[in-house]
Length: 176
Image (tube, rainbow, N blue to C red; front, side, top):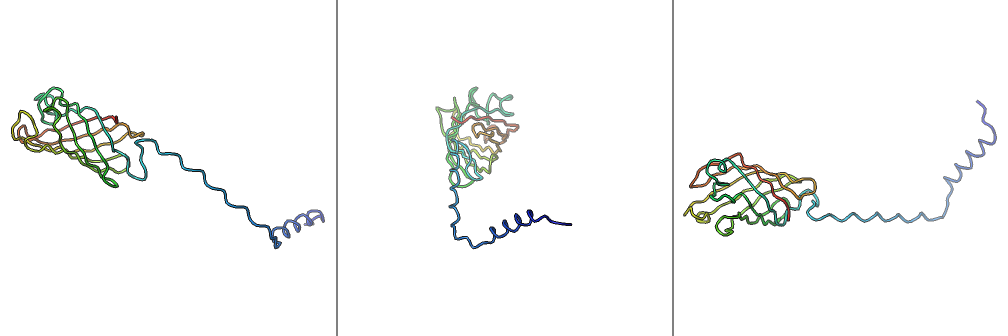
């Protein structure tokens, strides 16, 4: 194979230019574009932001049999509000109230979250359930957040000391 003299000159010129001891300074690296701002309610890291007020409704097996929700009497008891605050990576605490439930008496809600999924526990201390004397109860469940972290869908079950167990609970809460 024969190489033409013109091709050889080009190859050698490129080689010498690449290996020459040029004293020019390299250009400065360009700054990375700033990260886009995180929309309200969106996750930062692995924990989804759930801090805030969530309003929605719930229904379970006690709804059909006794006209209650979570074993709590009152036709509107299924309308609830959660006010929750993240307490650290993957954990939250707060209060829950139910419309038509004893003038807005508060129950405790706490849970965990990882990405868009989580667990929760609602504690209804004895004496906080109106018209039920010293009844108390507990609810446990799981939830998923939608892609924008503005809607929560969950499943739960639990028991009260007056009405016993309830199951097949479904809740939907929207961020306010």
